[in-house]
Image (tube, rainbow, N blue to C red; front, side, top):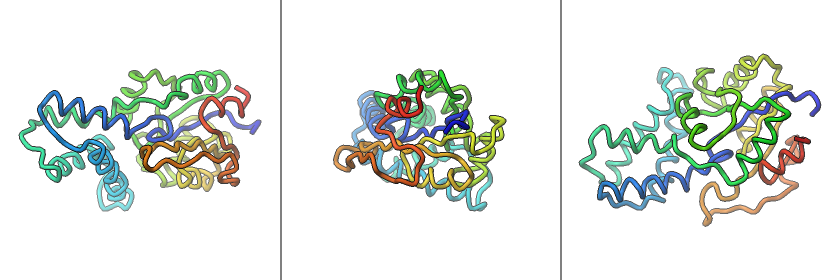
Length: 237
C-alpha cells in the first residue's frame, strides 16, 4: 500500500445514502405540491432503472448521455407508472435534481478529511460533473478532483472509466486505491490494476434489506473497513 497516492471513490451508496435521501426529497416534493406516493418504492424503482439506462450507452446502442439526462428520462417514466400527473418541466427538473442533494453517511466527512491529509481524493462515479460538484458543495465533501464517467466518457464497469481516471491524475493504476461498497465495482477496478478497499454499506437498500458487516468479507480486496473513519485508521491517515 506504500505505492498508493490517490483514493478514488464510488459515490452512490458508498459515500452518500441515496435511498434515504431520495425518500426525503420525494416526501418534501409531495408536501409542497400535494402529490402522494409511496416514496420508498419510488426511490427503489428509480434506482432500479439506473443500470439499464447506462447499459444503453455502454453497449453503443446510444451515444454518450450524461447521468442527469438518463435520470430525468427514468423519472418521466416513473411519474407515469406511479400515476403522478400535472407537473410542468420545471417541477420535473427540480425533482430530478434530488440526486444533487444526497446526504453523506455519518462517517464520511470526518473520514475524508483525515484521508485528504495523506492522499489525493477523487470521485470515480457514474455521476456527471455538475451533479458531483453540487453534491460536494452541499454536503461538504472535500474532493481534490471530480472524475469518473463523464470526463472518461465511459460508464463503470467499462475499463476506460478507471484507466482514464488514473491517467487524469497522472498516476499508474497501481498508485490508485478504489474505494467502494460494491464488490463488482472493485473487481472491475482490480482488473484494471487498481488496489481496492471494500467499505460495505449495510443500510444502502434500507433497514429491511440490511446486511451485517463482516471484517473478513471479500479477502481478495486489499482493505476491508467498516466505514471511512476505520479506513483512515487502516491507511494511517
